[in-house]
Image 1: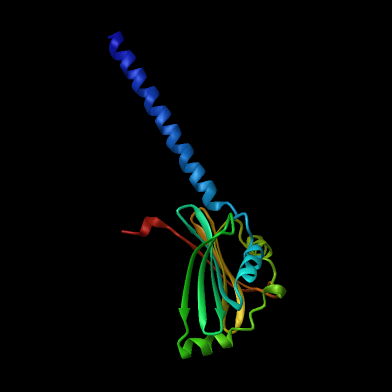
Image 2: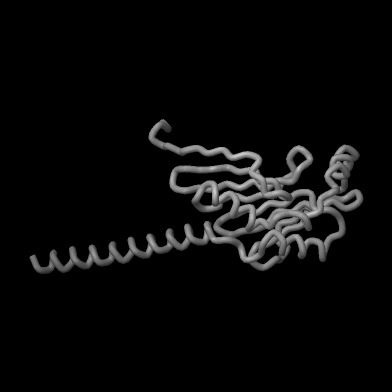
Amino acid sequence: MKKKLVVLVGALTISTAVGLGLSQSDQAASASENQEPTLSSDDITSIVKEQYEGKITDFELDRDNNQSHYEVEVIHDDEEYDLEIDAETGEIIKENVEKFQLENKQEATKNSNFDSSNFISDQKAKEIALKQFSGKVVGFELDEDDDKYVYEIEVREGNKEADFEIDAVTGDILEMDTEIDDDRFDD
């Protein structure tokens, strides 16, 4: 009987230790997913401008496997550079260069008035969104929409989510959509 009790206590101790270890690794992964990157969009813009001639036409913060990176598109003459830049180090992880087709070049020329110097910072845009809907910023992108640059921001709190479009120059909220993700009705 004592032997069975010792085996049972040992098994419970081991399973508790394993459970705590898994719980802590889940918490660490969740914390790193919601952590702001070391380098801001302004830092990345400076890095890109130092290394590439041309105009930035698209800019997005993305997370894959708990690692943050920026995706940046630069147009110069008849070339388009698609860059992936580490959000912690500023290192260019991936660079893809494409020659323009005529219709793409005309579209890029239309967007070539990109000048981020008069934009509010990405941090300010996030603060504006979080004043309207508290939670964690889980998606962030600078995008051109109807000849206007906007920050597209996704915020989550529990099962609630809000998507914002914020004018990159004025900081005005152009659009705010909220929804509740209720899995009870999914079958």
